[in-house]
Length: 129
Image (cartoon, rainbow, N blue to C red; front, side, top):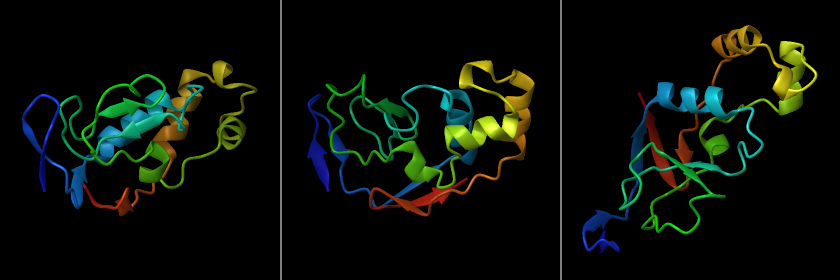
């Protein structure tokens, strides 16, 4: 189905499958994991809209006033099913707080972490590249 967006262009609103890059999502996790709003406020677009493209991040605490034209927006932890808790991460890297994680320990952790990607999220079948 196609709908008219607020920019007066037509966009697909009946998205049944989306292709995403594993490397892109891994990068988002590595870069954002230590943020206070991860994963609760971080969503990934599964389609194109007037203000976001497929695979881009949508921040619920910042982008909440932008119209996303009914594009499926699963939380990042709906895409990566086995994200560690902050406590498990700290234990694995041997640090007391997220602010004190040595960069080399963090890099080593993520290089050995086996990401488990979802096959479906937000009612959309996911195809991983």
